[in-house]
Image 1 (cartoon, one colour):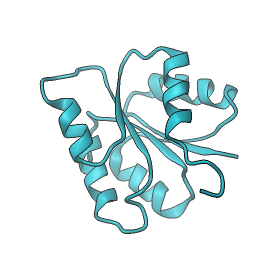
Image 2 (image 1 turned 90 degrees about the vertical axis):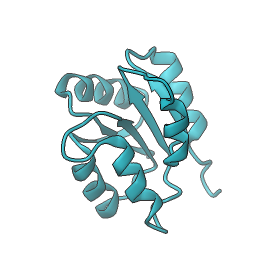
Image 3 (image 1 turned 180 degrees about the vertical axis):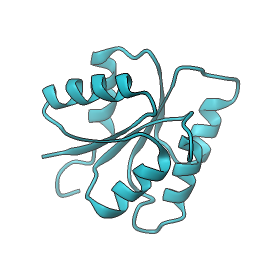
Image 4 (image 1 turned 135 degrees about the vertical axis):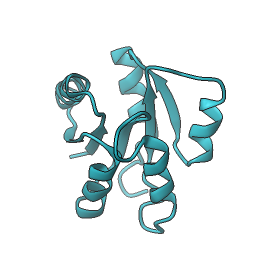
Amino acid sequence: MTRLLVVDDDDAVRGVLKILLERAGYEVLVASNGLKALGVVKAQRVDLVLLDIEMPEMNGFDFCGRLQADPVLKTLPVIMMTGRPTLGVVEKVKAVGARELIPKPFERANLLAKIKGHLQPVGA
């Protein structure tokens, strides 16, 4: 089963995404900040990370920087989310190695399509 990691400091967002993604057939792990998420991706197989940008302890950009510095983890697909898009944020998302930026609030069908589009086919 495809395993996703949802990283957001907002309990409600994590809860909604967990339910939505599990109903779509994914196994879902959650973390409340980038530091905890880093521990998860180092300890368990994760197929894709859905990552908030603004979080305490380690934000989304710092998390992506740590992934890029790790030869094993740097190919892990990351989709970043934000409720506050600012000028230049899309360029910064790409610069840190994330695949895409999804604004919050997100539309369910669009989110699921983006996730599916960034997952590697089995055996690839």
